[in-house]
Picture 1 (cartoon, one colour):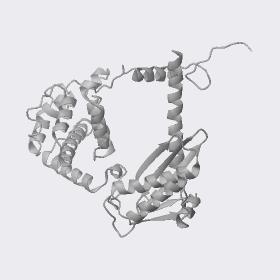
Picture 2 (spheres, helix red, strand yellow; picture 1 turned 30 degrees about the horizontal axis):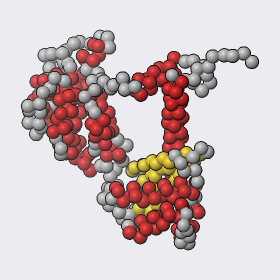
Picture 3 (cartoon, one colour; picture 1 turned 120 degrees about the vertical axis):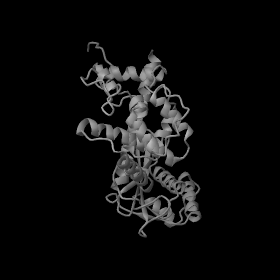
Length: 357
């Protein structure tokens, strides 16, 4: 057999530009020479943004602002898109993000009409993303942050109405929409806003006298890799929340199932859910708990912690369901394991690659 060149960036050994690009990006990130466009945003700021109590589409909108990628006329001209270099709202200046959200006379009147006109006073506004980041740092009330994001969103939506539908700014109507929008966000849990689900269940309790259902399941694969997933459903079987866990040195399926159940119980306590029914397909786990088969072993100690948690925290129950009824948690557990293994393989490949350099 003759020797041949093999490219380690792909599974089949064939060189592709795509794999080279991904490898270059990974190397740049690992060497800390790659930085996001929004260099003034630290890790804590991004964690705050993605954990904020606003709909996902608003998080993406704020993310676009911080990266300066909103399609304003300035941004479109930079991309060689033939548009008029004027603000479509006031026609007095070029439409930059600073002009659209701060300096435009129409926008400024909207801020003055709201109750937020005093927030940005005294803050430097060299760039609007930096101004917004410092504004969020000063404002600590969730409702106030929600109002700011709502006004920004309405400014952008109204600007698009002017551009694409020929409508005009109407301040009273816009402010009513802002207030109604904020009130709706406060009533609906954050992870259900974008899906348009009705607020049938609140984290602090239940409505309608029905209990929540938490499906849990674990998944294992050869090589001491395992993962688990908990999926919380409301009384109408709609997904409210989901949580995943990974284990690198656990390959016993029963131990994984017990660990995931323990994590699900702690997850319930941490989120303050009052009444939860836990459903799983690990029949052996249920039998050991019901028959009090707690032995001095690894799984026995985990089950003992589960029983203690059940005794100290009333308001939930366990129920065995077959794989067919637990398909939601089973599917997401398998998906979590697949993603985890993909991450491990990528890390191992990079480790091997750097060892050869």
